Image (tube, rainbow over all chains, first blue to last red; front, top):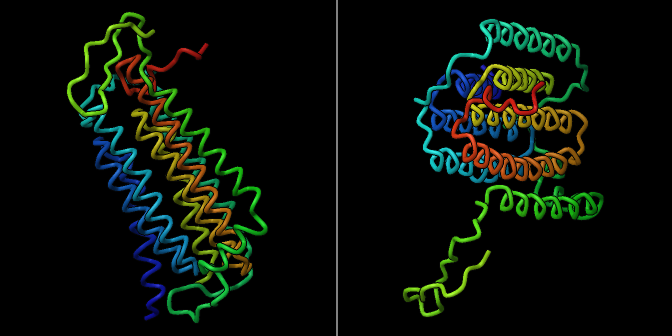
Length: 196
Length: 99
């Protein structure tokens, strides 16, 4: 029995099952945990494809940071999966959605089944290529050939942070006093002027 | 293992993500399905990078992770604003731009 095949089968089955469970149950926190499980399985697939560094990055950045952001928002909004989402806006809405999405999924699978790639063996037990997918190689490419996209990504992150703050910030009304805390950490002086 | 097998797994994951986008009515679960589809695209790029033996695909996936982080931050800020203004997370209620 090929061990690589076993690892591939187990991690892909877990990835697909937990991806289905993301929207097959109601509790959003459980959805986030299932999505994290799916991401961990995908990280195993990354490692099998010779991408050790990107597998680690996927776990650290995606499962570690972005999913925590999701959890934070769900807990901030206090969603428990027991919200009344009401009836669908139209009685035919749900069957139509399911039929269309199933047809779409079947179509994608059929088209991608014709993909022709150069035959390469992948797996954890395959003799590793020291120049493929290592931190050294990814870093070299990132700071030589892809240096301008890297700079643009930094600008994009800055814009996204500013946009998120502007969007989520509560608009302050004119007559609401601004609470300030002085340097010593003691109780703030009562606001003497209104800032609007 | 042939990289085509990984492409097939990624395609199934993408299809599941798009199904989730279409049928879920909770806006946060819908957003998570979008993330799932995005990750499936990343897995396809990884398989192609392995099949062609070039590391450039890994750099592209790195950029896509960055864009996904930015997208998650902005999207969740929008969800918070929507929830604050409407008091619901039902996607069917946000129909202001619908004719």
